[in-house]
Length: 219
Image (tube, rainbow, N blue to C red; front, side):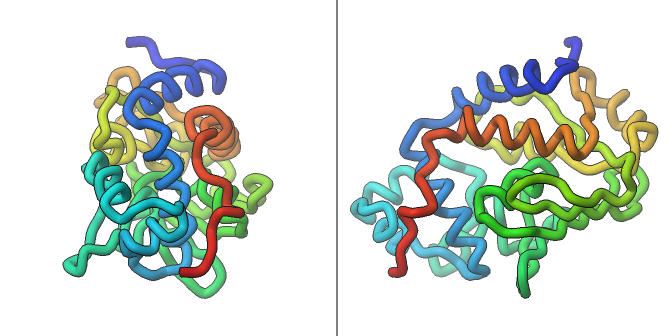
C-alpha cells in the first residue's frame, strides 16, 4: 500500500479508520478521562459518571467497549491515551510527569488539557532522546529540529493502542526511521510540527464529539 503523502490525506485515512472504531459516548467519555488523568490520580467510574451526569452502570458499559484502557486493582482507570503508567513517551506538565500511549497523543493532549507540556521520548531507531515543548497553541521547540513521528493506517478496531499507538513513535530524523519504515510497508513519517497539525485536525474531526472541558466539575 502506498502511504498517504499530505496531512489532508492522512487525516482522511485516520478519520475513516479511527472514527469507525468508536461511537459518540466513547468520545465524550475519553475527553473527560484525559482531563481527569491529567490531575495525576487514578479515576474512578463514579467520578466519570458524576462529571458526565450518567449512571455508573452506563459509564461501565461504555468503558468495557475499550480494551485498551488501563485499570488498577481497585477498579479505577489509570490510562486512556494519557496514562499514569510509564511508557517511552514522558508528558511533563507543571509538577507532574505522566505518560502517553504514543507520540501523536503527546502532541495532541496539550491542547486538550490547556497546558504547556514538555515531552521527552527516545528515538525508536537509535534510543537517543527527542524533546518537544508543546503549548495549547502549537509546537514551540523540537530537539533535534529534524525529528519525525511515525504513522500507520490502522485497521478499524476498538483496541486503538494495539493497532495504532504501538506504531506511532518519535525518531531522531527521517534517516533514523528508514529501517523501521522498511519493516512496516504503508507506514510514513512526518516532521514533528506537521504531526502536531495532523493531531489538531483529528481533534477537530474524529474527536469533535468529545465533551467540552467546561463540563468538568469537582466530584
